[in-house]
Image 1 (cartoon, one colour):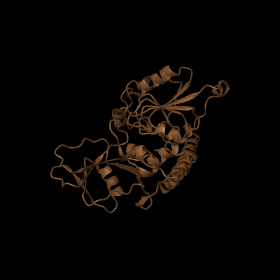
Image 2 (tube, one colour; image 1 turned 90 degrees about the vertical axis):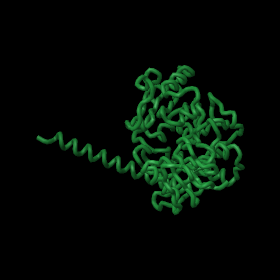
Image 3 (cartoon, one colour; image 1 turned 135 degrees about the vertical axis):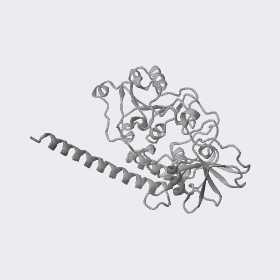
Image 4 (cartoon, helix red, strand yellow; image 1 turned 135 degrees about the horizontal axis):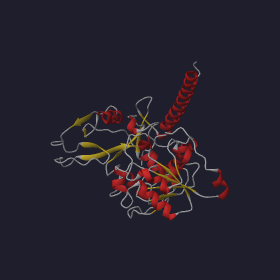
Length: 351
């Protein structure tokens, strides 16, 4: 199975896209024209209709029209999607969408059935190692680091990371049939392992004030030992012993770093023998290696477009750009902090 190509076809239609997302679609369609429409009646049979994420299929759709669902890929950007930053990768799914566990997605189907060649496995291994080496995550946000308290080093107490999510996200609606709140997840983790040191990291969109807190999230301190926010997930994952999630991509990022992951929902990376699954997915019967999972999710499934050229590229080149982008962002942040300290120091030194 080959790496995904950019969106193509002479009959591409897109429904329900904001102006910002229209620019994303055009970028990933390359030279292929996309017709943005407000009505779906009378679309020609054999055409393709693009929808974002889990957007409902509009009524009145002509038979024979192929639905393609678009969503951000797993190596995305430096900065949040809600900050209107263009993604480096996109997925185009003709079966479902990767976070909807109620039915198979293209990603699930390829993980279930692909014959992974030795060359592809080696490529995935090298890509994974580079992601870990450069501490890259989906958004690569956060400027601070975290170290486990000295007393934990003395006692050997295990550190568990619980990843918060935006509770209104479709990934919870379609992939978490039992526990659907952050505080519910924290309670379950605490009750299952009361002697562990539990860290809770709110979703970065919530921390930034771009999305609302979840139900009772103001009380999470009752169920954890520490709350961390402006800490890079790539840094934090090096310091913890286990990761517990509903459906968060943090679980996948922890697997890439060979950390034990417990899933209380049904994310795309659960059910393949790599995670502890509280709510198993019966359709997923194959046992995968970590490299097979990485090959499917990072090489075969997404489409990558270069920030520099606007053309289709490989995940390896996209990672190169992402690493350079991250380092440039950190340098700018450092310069900004130094300038701020300089002006504050001079302001208060005035007579």
